[in-house]
Image (cartoon, rainbow, N blue to C red; front, side, top):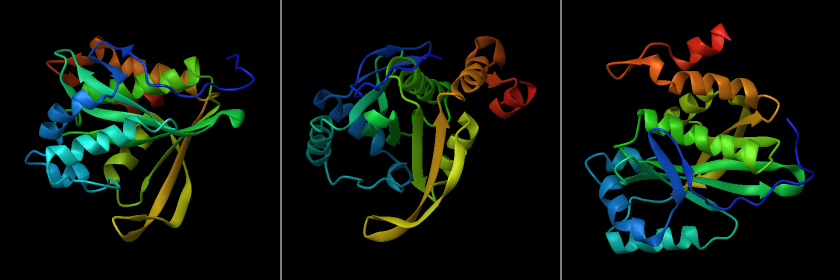
Amino acid sequence: MDMPAEAKVPVAAVINGRHGSLRPLGASDASMLYRHSHDDNVATTWAEMKVGPFVDEAAFAQHIDDLVSDPKRAFFGVVDLEGAILGWLCLMEARVAHQVVELGYVLFTSGIQRTTLATEALYLVIRHVFEELGYRRLEWTCTAQNNRSRVAADRLGFTYEGTLREGLLLKGLPRDICMYSMLSSEWPSRRTTMEQWLDPANFSDGRQLRSMNEIRADL
């Protein structure tokens, strides 16, 4: 795959998929996202996030405004086919001269967790990073206790590189940080795996026929 001399600075854009789409996160999304992220599963949704949950919708709306106003981060809203926004993804910590960027600060509300749209959203943003923005390395970090994020990284084909002991303070507590990465040289095989899993032929009555690990093993 041909790579540009320097990667592009991430900017949120519209990226359409089969099960939904990504689009720039905006202040108008606060009301719907607040309802989805502060439901009966609020504690689980925000457990491993640096902030949240929020005391009210106004505080949450201010947080979203702060996020989308940061020029160093690109926030993509995850939208289903009915137009409901169910979460967000973020490209951040871009080091364009070195073609390195991080996929992080992912918020998936209970309505999108463990769905085909969740996998497709991650596929769309990863494809965007390697094929449109020209990055060589994509990083994924999470706390050592964030099992959902660690399982997702493994499932998508990221490589675990090690743990940064007490790498950050999360809500006042020191936490170990796990580092994962995916390289542009690995992307073609990872893309094939994800696309075969997302193929409608891989599902029967809404259930997968082959897991991503099984597809990867066959390849």
